[in-house]
Image (cartoon, rainbow, N blue to C red):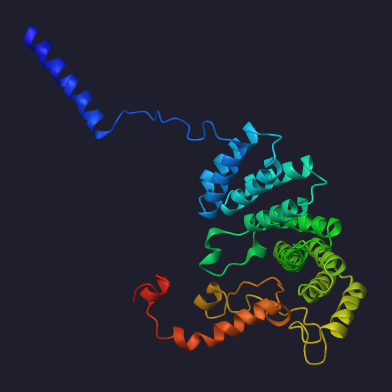
Length: 330
């Protein structure tokens, strides 16, 4: 029995020493490297981290700087750089929260416009997906809550600081956000057509025409109104929408060469359905009206189409494996 106890003791000691030798079980007991740092030491260390794009270390030290020197010389600048570090690290929620806090605490700060600007950029980034950098996606078909927030933030930036150095870029982004918000309303109207909610579709089209003037979605807004009012048997309102559409956008695909509106024309999904193909056209599902004329009125969409047509010749010789791997393998 005594030998068994000795054996167990030796095994336990070996296991303990083995874990220590392998580095297991050791707890981090390193001292805080920032112990004894002055405010300037902290700030210089933070600048080194920011310059090296080491965002996580910069964020940690910026938070320590604020906690240890809340009223110091670099406190306000550190809060601004914390907003930036959160944004660059992909922590958009944290960047928005830090920006809101800075705006609330320092509404008269000379650089408060920067807080508005980065907050708006963070809200725009929230509305984008991970795969947007790899494959073309349609942001207008997603939840547009973040896009609305960004629109409100950048609008406030321009109204409060029209001469800000960030104003020119904010204006460009507002135009794109405005176009996306208008297009999202058209997508909703198309959905209402599919559900048979024609009054709701008409209201969406009217909202686009009244609130997003000069956006590429306005022609589709007029077409939505015409189609919806026609289905509601409110022909006078439908005719008024058609008149405005003909006068301003005569090339809209819902109009024929004589300017007549094709109420029964299916602008999207016009191809035969799978059921129709299987039954050789004997049974087919009627497609609800849908409107999307971005290829005509949206400059960005037109450019994308032209680039796509120019690259067709280069893509025709690619194998399926090459396409699946985005050209990495063939």
